[in-house]
Length: 366
Image (cartoon, rainbow, N blue to C red; front, side, top):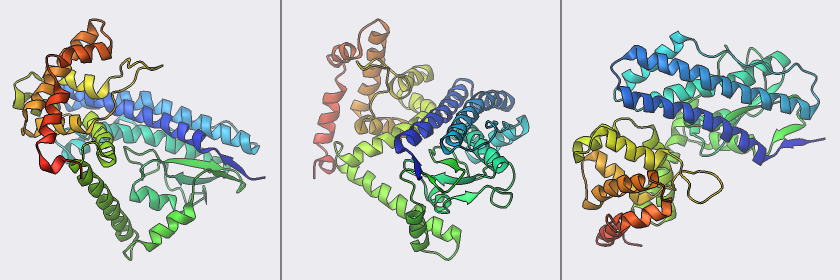
């Protein structure tokens, strides 16, 4: 009898892992923002603590999923065992290598997130090899070209030939793709279509795997750039909304934006960091059942971009004043709605931004 893991179940699993990875990245970025990048040992020590803490959570979730699949298929196997977490030397190499690649520290969060994510992937592969199960790389969300190529291989037996070494080496940050396992061909993951992915890969230009992946990357990049350009012409368009979501995620990972905006505006780094956390990182009571992040906004994203590039418009400075006052009022006990209305009477960012976009022809609706 064919059995499929429901798409909702798999999405919930990958989303839980992604939250763990993101939390590790955010804490690393916050530490680096507070303490700077000069003390490599302090950075490595903190990264090691985060990797140990969050890798355990990632591996534990993978164990739970592995055991659930085994139970679903009636496989007579031992409970899954978590993979080992990276040692201090590996974390140090990751931190040092990342700072060599990106001296501004913007990728430090990604380096920690990747090691945490790998713990979950390694756990799946380790137990699959032990139990002679099959594995597949399941794409999720906006998967990259390389992940699509890996996923196109379909289900494979977990042997020393197909799984070399103790680590899943292709793991990278900002990715929600994950390994699934099965004990017989009667099980699959809903929505996983390796044949379609294989066709896309084989039809890509190039003679080697690297050439084909690069071709797929160029196609994906062209599509995203097209969306972004369209959104830039229409701040209220669907492409602008998509761009805002991606840019908010990028802002949360950055370190260098805070000192740049401080230098460009005269506000202290501490003030800019508080605004950034309030606007992009912290969850708030917005009237729902649970605290939540502010919804990504293209116009605010563009203001933040100009602020850090030193190309400030008047309404961009109003944004900083607005968010500082709104945060202060919420800290005093005002609801977000009350604080926003009260602040807008003094610093009306929405009105100023609308006037700015209205007078620029290239931003008008097409």
